[in-house]
Image 1 (cartoon, rainbow, N blue to C red):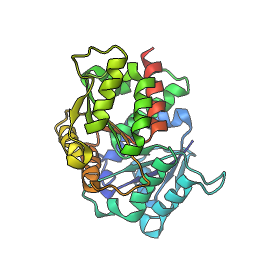
Image 2 (image 1 turned 120 degrees about the vertical axis):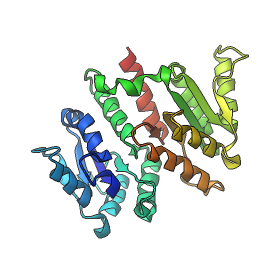
Image 3 (image 1 turned 60 degrees about the vertical axis):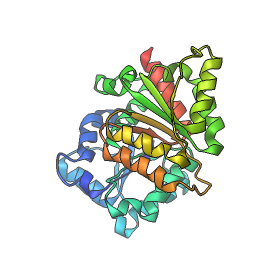
Image 4 (image 1 turned 135 degrees about the vertical axis):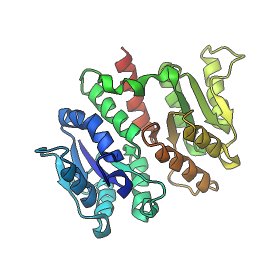
Length: 288
């Protein structure tokens, strides 16, 4: 498994930074899985300087971002042949770092979404991804990831753009039992209505909404959910984006994404149906 890796300066500038909080939690899992990490220059150098992944042959150095390192990750997410194709990317984002909205940063996420590969922008999502892959590899559950799977104490946001609403409904139908384990579910506008109708058709009490509905995305629903994320009242978002169309509420979408990365240790965000299905299958396996 080959994964691109980058982090904005805030997230690797000292030993307490987000990159190293993730590695403390997940280095053992990375080694168990044999993940090949393809790290942009400054991120790679910070890992070595702090002594993480010492002697690990799977850590590879790419050029600095200013020399095209992140651009190369984008190309390899798309695929540059068998030896230069990434299976996803971890980009720990500082939402107030100007480089986080450079074209190559935006393109990295977009190409991950288009190709159905993980785009991981928070510490919590990175920890969660490692546990998903460990479970699919047949390894025993890591007690250190139990907090991520305490769904009964969490709120899940389910959001889908118009062209992705059928995919969201199919996902919710197939993995209904996993999603029903969450203490609360929230959704925007029409997606929420359709999810409630699905739940009622499956026997959910007809006088009880399965999801709490907020405004539609264009009317501010993304901002409402972002507020819950910032307040620690929404811990996981599954957001099926349509990367092929311009969105009239693009600023609201970015606001939600920035909220998630602001609380990097608390919020998990999944942005593609294939990735969400893999997570849900692992969650079911982990629960036994």
